[in-house]
View 1 (cartoon, rainbow, N blue to C red):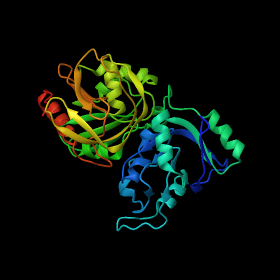
View 2 (tube, rainbow, N blue to C red; view 1 turned 45 degrees about the vertical axis):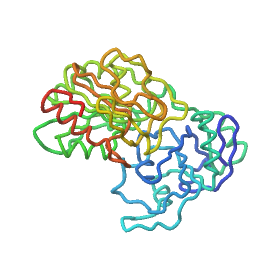
View 3 (cartoon, rainbow, N blue to C red; view 1 turned 90 degrees about the vertical axis):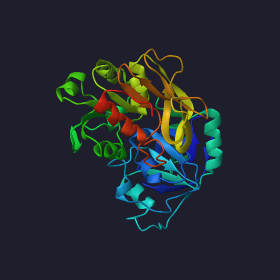
Length: 357
């Protein structure tokens, strides 16, 4: 049984890992991607959330370690219409069901995900519970479930130790707020990268003598991360900065902006974004529940806008040599339209000038 905390109830079948308590709680969000389910499930930005896939058939091409975005999933669970029992792909090393069991991720299948998606669209992302426990116990857990508002989930997913990747003459310090493997690979193709814990101070960053700073994606409410914003504020103007997703929200906050929670967030791989400087339209991958409040940025300017709902998708502050985007240019999963932004970051580090093309 799946129950949202407004009392809406669904019935399905237990799948994946079966917790001893028989119940899983979290904030329910829906993802509209047609493929890339393994990358979605292993994205640390889903910490504290249960992912409902709108695509009805999940797991048909199995799983492979090559597609992991983290060492293990951070999501609370997944919801599907149908979970494929027979993977069919030459890259597959196992089934999605076995993957979920191995990583202790509960799932519920047989759900009318169209009805669930419409409900979340109408009422926003909702806390809730699902499981094979006693009916009243699941309902009680759903009523008591909490969302991600005001919660620092970054401290949970961030690395505790400094790590190094890549090589080259340009050095980048990357803050790990929940960094994805594909982001690291894109940076490591171009730079020598030092990934640091989210708690790293500005002085510690400067002591590493980087040429620039990268702010990664991550889970939860940016308004709960005031200490991280303070660190970024100390680095703005001293070093070039590029931020993605949560990193975008934190950079914008350091530049004077505020953030707010979207009704049901952006989770999918087909969002059209308008680059205001070039006029180009990019089809982008997205995964966020919070966004920058329009009209609150005191430094820099809006650079990208979502064509679906007008949400701010990018900012740029040329004098401060920093820029960021709300969407995922690393494309894990795709599309790859926006990967040029990593080249833009390299150009900024090598010339000191933030180009817009």
